Image (tube, rainbow, N blue to C red):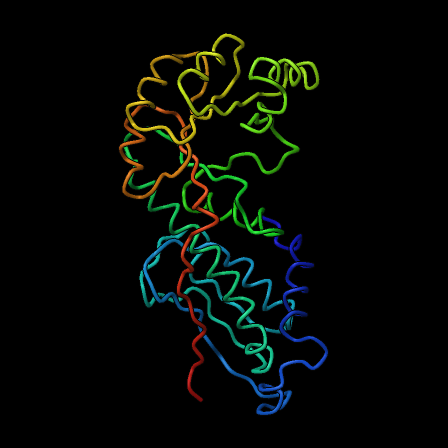
Length: 279
């Protein structure tokens, strides 16, 4: 991943933290030539993501900071593990600390939750996918974190895939009309996904056809029936209210994909810290 594309995002994070006054605490205590060494340390077991972004944060704060990578994005780490080792001007290390930890904690939390769900469905062949329920401006990074946790990405935005949802269907006057209008606009090279909430809606969709059907908020028994109805006609995707307690039973219904909004909207922050070495 080319992390330089996120430079503007990082600089805006710096501006949020520093405004026009800078780091009042660090600049009051340490002179410009004071140097320190420190370690980025995992405080829990999990999967890390965002180390490249954290490195970029320190580099943009002071390109003279020396950085040694100990772990890499996608690695499973244990509590107490060193992730990065750093050496440089004390002011720069302290000033960049929180911004780096915010990115790393958020992204590693997503990767860790994703890996947990992937582990729970092991052996079923189902893909665990994210959704568009992401933090504004952080979507590319959060979806990257899902991949680092072993998950798959759903569409990145409204621009790269067709997904006909309940409100489209209601406003268009039915599934058949919505699908027909989309086909007339996008042509045969773009895949069409349609959301259904009942087996009756699925029957209606099977008449007109689509590439993917999203089976929304269905019970395990309904999902099994839906999978049998679809056969090889469409890719089946289950979504809606799926948790760590239910995901295995959903995967065992035979669906191809399970999409989980919680991967990005409810992942707990990963506990990570910057520990300074004693002088």
